[in-house]
Amino acid sequence: MRVLVVQDGEHVADALRRGLEGEGYVVDAVSDGVDAVWLGRENPYDAIILDVELPGLDGYRVCSTLRDDGVWTPILILTARSGERDEVQGLDQGADDYLTKPFSFAVLVARLRALMRRGAPERPAVLVAGDLSLDPATRCVRRGDTLITLTGREFSLLEFLLRRRGQGLSKREILRHVWGDDFEGATNLVEVYVRRLRNKLDRPFDRAAIETLPDRGYRLAVDGG
Image (cartoon, rainbow, N blue to C red; front, side):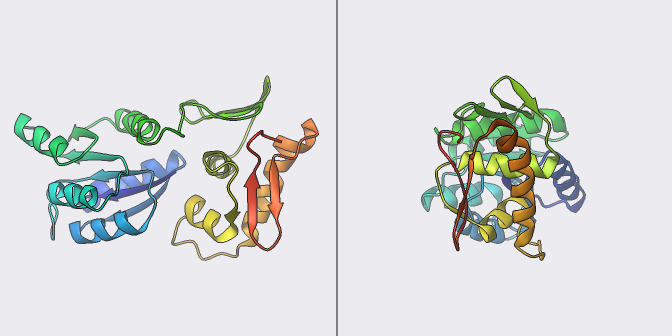
């Protein structure tokens, strides 16, 4: 899903972006606290990975400002500050978790998944619509008892549709969340990937889970078709 990475160090930010994109996340990255507050207010991120030592506003101020503004996106503080008082301050300012550098990327991703599940009640460990299920942790997709193999982008698209099941989603909105804000291609790319998902998830099982909304986009049926 969509993650905001806020890190002062360019090397760490680039490494996090590459790693998270490899896990199927769409990543925005900034290095300034003021930019982090603006993006956090304007975009429906699924999680924020936040440094403490930032220009503009430090991570504690970023966190408290977003909470004061009613932004409850799960926040994981990732910082070199390892003192007990630092951790207490971060959590008291509204962060949901605190991880110190150096860190294990596998642990970071696991904590991120846990935060996303806790961050909103509609995000269970396994996403289900009828007999269609997707497990973000194991990256397994099933239709009933049948295991279905998806590419990374197909998986990300299905995950987004499942998390918003029952909601109409425009092609532009799908592009922004699955491909990222920087993607400049045509919206018909969404049609291509929807067709691929239908060929794997619907047609072999005589289902119609992914509905086309004329002049709007697509919707995944709540009952999985």
